[in-house]
Image (cartoon, rainbow, N blue to C red; front, side, top):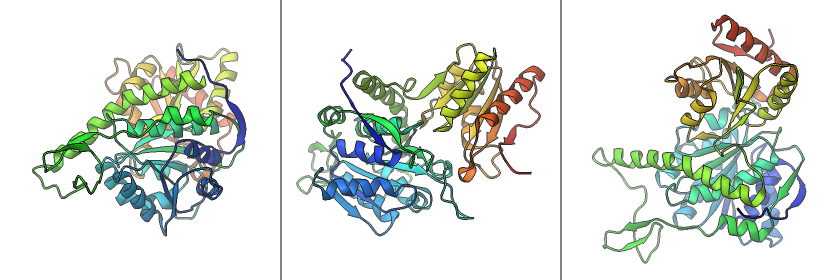
Length: 410
């Protein structure tokens, strides 16, 4: 095991933590368009460019659609690329998100998660990234600014891994994390550079019979994203799924290696369990809400209640087997969705957790809690009420309301 390196503590909000990690990752091209609450990321990084702290081509595009297209083009030529967005900006990228993953371009993107219009709302929920969950991007959600910094550095290693080669997004809750100042321990520049490393390329066979790097190069012509009719398209999509399955292991490996350097671990990199070993009731959630839930879990544990938390860090690829292992003995489970799937009989996270637990020998009774839409606060007393309700569900061995709403005005 490596010795934990000496680190510097900086006061950074979540957006600044993203920018600092990108600065250390030796990124070649950043293309972006500003949108609240992401704007600080690219503003801060543009300062690094202007000050000569990085050797990065910064492209301020006319839209988010153009930003992701520029990143795709740069990545296709072999550049390490980064962008950031949120809400309507991410929606405007929708078409090109599929193209980026289909071309196996390892672009890294930070999402300052924000609600969708209408009505207009600039505050945090997970609607934006959840709407892109089938676009072929790896999705990682952070609990705090420290994890934001750590996850962005890890994202480059994950995305560019030869067994993955998929774009990766890191989600941080809008305003709750993006604009909140926290202590963040950062690696020395040279250590971060070494950890991220130099981008590697898969080898492919060209039409000329040459084995070359998979990147656009005039000396070795090739085509990316060509037309694929029914006799070939299916195979391309299956390969993307195989890469997602590979990412389950790679995310864990990169997370563990980073933990040896930094001393920081987030569960196994895919999920983080908190006081779950003997829990009878538990909550599952994403992002910053986990910090509040942990506080309530500690309070209830001190009062003698067997409660716990499972935080999902990697939503794509979805760690179904790990979730089933962690929650197999829980009697009642509350799945918290900061997003609503209209007409979907529950939120996206709840649907995925139901699927993961369907074949369990004794699956827990599950209640889906929709909460925090448009940035509405969810406080410890409301989390406590969820645990109280789950206790009643466990005792009654019956779920009367499978979908409930937290903090909704009557």
